[in-house]
Image (cartoon, rainbow, N blue to C red):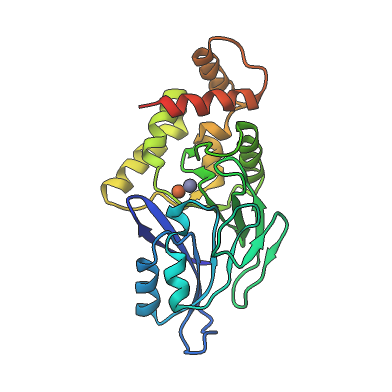
Length: 261
Ligand code: ZN
Ligand code: FE
């Protein structure tokens, strides 16, 4: 899949999936925009590339993921896929777990429900790429605004069950600050320390750390490592008593991260 990042706001990514088979009526390419919180970067891209908007995918209702949709639709007619379980007035194709999105010229995308950050949050998966909005971040996960820790834990496990080679396109550049927390949890994780250096180099050059790979997240993201002895031990020290299962470890980590500076 041909995927490009557009930056928005401080640290958002709007992902563009491009169909370069020249299927568009004007001979230009067609794009799917994921979570266009701002219209301008997308409008500029469409104009410069003489591309058509094939569809918009929305992961959840927050304004930094939906705010540009109205302006995009004012100039480009396109279906808007988004969570059936959230009230988003611009969504025209309410989507649920198990739905398959088929758009000519693009790989099929599977809809996954990943509640936790919000109660109806969706992720989209196809052709080795995962668009997961604010569920999974580089070395971290989204905050629990509407869902429970148990829901988020189940959602993260659903994503972690995808193939390790999956490229993860999350919606924010949070990797470096998340790594600081991850190092507090697992200071002796060699893969994590190596990742910290790599992320620092990339960010010093103002380059993205995203996409991530699921395999690397499993090796370094503490929220996907709640069954690892070092992570359990750190969570137990923080909590002051023993924790009997990975979900309980996750709850402690998520609260610890909320207070981490
Ligand atoms: Zn959000
Ligand atoms: Fe967000």
